[in-house]
Structure formats: structure tokens, C-alpha cells
Length: 156
Image (cartoon, rainbow, N blue to C red):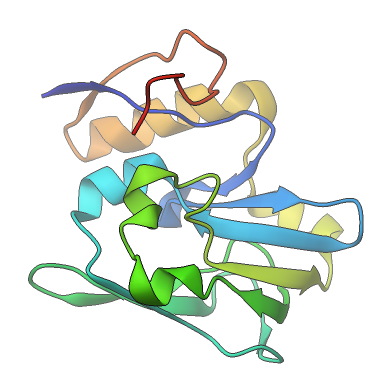
């Protein structure tokens, strides 16, 4: 099985849980599931995020997703308080598949202590090898993205 999976190097990844955070300049982070995580778990039929105002530590459950045969927790890569939930996922959970690093985000958090959380996160040049290793552990063969992790122009 061979697939090119994107892992934009500017995001922060909690690789063991296949979740990402895009740190914003206003002290918040947008978070979601990686493309590899989606590939490993299968199609998402439902996503139910924690409510606005919920305080989460790194690794806590930020949402649950329903897959074809199970309901699984989605961990947060960073700690903080939920300030927004992607309500579009209520009606269109397939956004998680179609645009995992864009419209398929799950929650936005007001960051609690990013400097502490960063010890567990991977970013930059370390992302591709970390994702390849995680894929190897799950027996997936990946084709390196040749466009720096940016979505392809013809991506669905």
C-alpha cells in the first residue's frame, strides 16, 4: 500500500496520537487529526468535540469520532481552553478527510502553556521522518510529498 500523505512542517504534531496544532499569533491554536491518522483509522462518520469553555491538558480527549466499527477519542496536541468548535463537522464530518489541515479542523484552543507542551511536539524538518516512522510502525509505505506539505492543487 503506497500513498503520498501530507504533513505540513509548519504545524506542531503529537505524533503518537496523530493530531496537529497550528499555533496562531493571538495565543490560540487550531487543532485537528493528521492525514496519516485519518488513513490509519478509516472514514469518520461523526465528530463530537468538547464544548467551548472546556479546559484540556495536552493529551486529553478533545473530541470523539465515530468510525465504521468504533468510537474513538481524539487527543489534543496542546493544552488550553476550547474557544471554538468547528460546527461544520456536525453536518459534514467528511471535511476531516477532504481538508484535514484546513476546513477539517476540530477545535480552537486558548493556549495554556505551549512552552511546556512543545517537549512532546514535533515540527519542522523532524516531521517527515517522525511520520514515516509512525507509518512504518503501522505497516504503511509512504511516498514523500514533493510539494513541501502543501495540499495539491487538484486535491479533493
